[in-house]
Image 1 (cartoon, rainbow, N blue to C red):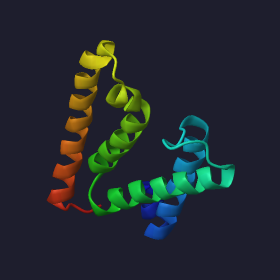
Image 2 (cartoon, one colour; image 1 turned 90 degrees about the vertical axis):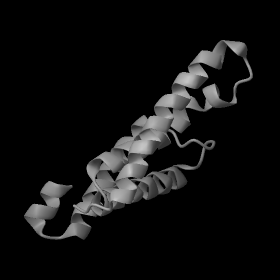
Image 3 (tube, rainbow, N blue to C red; image 1 turned 180 degrees about the horizontal axis):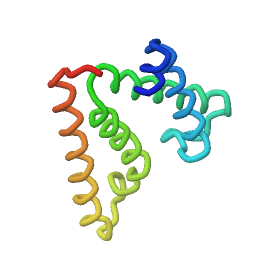
Length: 117
């Protein structure tokens, strides 16, 4: 994103390229965490996520955007650990919660530092 912004001198173009790349990749690799939406809705949801991550990068820094992405992806993948009532998942639940909490703390530190790209 920084490369496109630097070469084109247009931040909005860099954001659009980033959103398109994130949406295209996410469509094939990542399911949305709430059911089976239609294809158009799935693309729209991923585009909104991509826009949020691009704006986080512009407003704060790369680490904040990465940590926010990790938190969203981890909740999607780890929902079974958080909501399972089985005893077999107790240790996994605490490990998952600790890793998710660490990423959230790093994202919050980036949020409050208010650095810009």
